[in-house]
Image 1 (cartoon, rainbow over the protein chains, first blue to last red):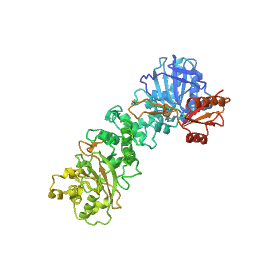
Image 2 (image 1 turned 180 degrees about the vertical axis):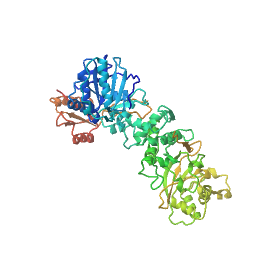
Image 3 (image 1 turned 60 degrees about the horizontal axis):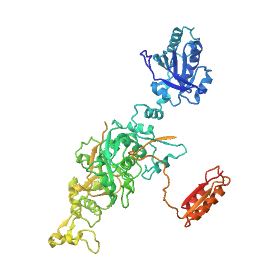
Image 4 (image 1 turned 120 degrees about the vertical axis):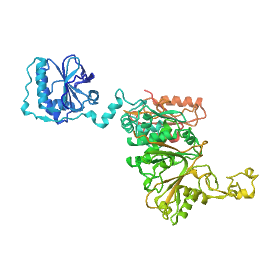
Length: 534
Length: 92
């Protein structure tokens, strides 16, 4: 950094020297303040010069060394026979407050604490000029330094407070920090992981402790203000600020670049249409399934290929988990509280994947739903079951494989039940896509029609009977003619309930399906939200 | 000490979780002497009072090897498996 002559009024400080005695700045006298680090070569070059300055001018000005090296400060002082106060700034709060970049960093200050001369590193001419200035200002003889024996130029080392770990901590603690959440101090005798379990923060798996520095790093993943309220989360109607979402994202194990996806997911589930309250509370046991589309898939390394619906990818696993933790912690939906699923399901830990748009012969899900291909979008579906496999290794014609995909959806709710106004999310694997496309294009709607066709059964197959009491109760069929009962009823009340995406590895003829919950106004409607990437 | 940030909506205070208090005594009550002198005298008196005032319950006596160290895991597990309540006592 070049010399700065503009007046600078650094903040005051009070630090202890190596003997434990406190020293405050401003000192009430002219002062030379220098930030040093024991393991910095350049600071070690400057050490003897500083001592010479102190010996020559110490009667007329204070010389304070602000050391960042903790216990190493004493080593530094001994090595150079320093007799001025060497102050302990191991937490680097003073370095942070003074906003230095490297060490040594020199400030010549007047009695009021304002600095007119400051420089960094070791440029011999700077230091020599400083020696002359000290002599002139104090009216004492110039310090005796063998300038020719010293290097002409040596760059400084980075100030320790700029180490990422330390810098984030300092920023989190500083005035004007974006952190507002309640701080919980956990005694050193307590196990942090166990404490978080005890507090009910966990979904049953271990959590990453959301320390202020980790949350600061997480917040760097979005341009949005930390205190912006993203959504009101039922059942407690808790405010999901960007900060609260970031805290839960840290606990879930997210990287900062995943945060915008989590935020969009929280926005999507906390809409009236999606109805996360009902999705959480239903005894049937529903959970949000997140599908991610657009360029962000590649940018953050999401899995849309081999094992896309399963374990092994950090982005898929932790984004879905972060969304669930926000609902749990900010919304207060604890298991056995408002979360009242009879059996639960593993999607309640996490369920998030990306569509392999490039392998799909159709417009991807988000484009189908009105977004641009270049938009990054998260779509949430309320699903009660899945992924349920659809195994067909022998179909060779498009008609056949489309038929199998349809029959694979018979299990939604119960094979017997048809005409369901219920969503299904079909995830077709690449090999099945290839079979479907082998004779030319098949669009999504044609596939939906085929699904409705192969699943159609006479209405009379749905009547409650001795074999199964589920279905249409006798009272409801009282006025029906035999012709009416012979009318075919497809699986879904409309083909718009069938949602289709492509994912999975190139090898394997195994598609899969997620089965919906109550779809529509009484239950949940799938929602897409554009991911705000600033 | 570690500082973490509260992930919740902050409507409930953060506290160490204590075991639920059932409001009445039943089953087996463990009496743990931590091995300070005369702890046994105190627990003898307590056991007598329990027998008199809560006749339906049973008591079991345990002793820590030394008051100066935490309770060994094996003893803690034994107490956990055998008792519904525990009174840990010292006298000095």
